[in-house]
Image 1 (cartoon, rainbow, N blue to C red):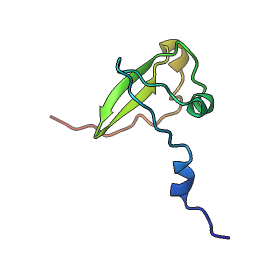
Image 2 (image 1 turned 90 degrees about the vertical axis):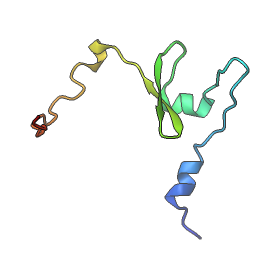
Image 3 (image 1 turned 90 degrees about the horizontal axis):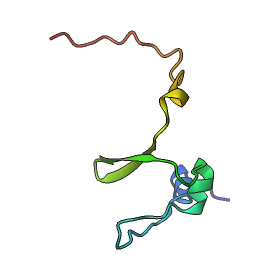
Amino acid sequence: MPRKSSTTRLRRNVNAVTVTSRFQITIPQSLRKEMGIRPGQRFQAFQYQNRIELVRVISMRKARGMFKGIDTSVERERS
């Protein structure tokens, strides 16, 4: 039995969406369930190369401690 490539596994989650005349799209149900997206949640839209990316907006209160333990000793450029 042939082994499925990682590309094949990724493509199963690819869903086509259509832009309406009001420039709206519907996020497919499978993605909404998988990502826990609920009505009323806010997202920021970014253009990255040749695509649009949506990033969930979270409150500062929920973001607190998100990067606990991160290494902040990054060498910075000197001007």
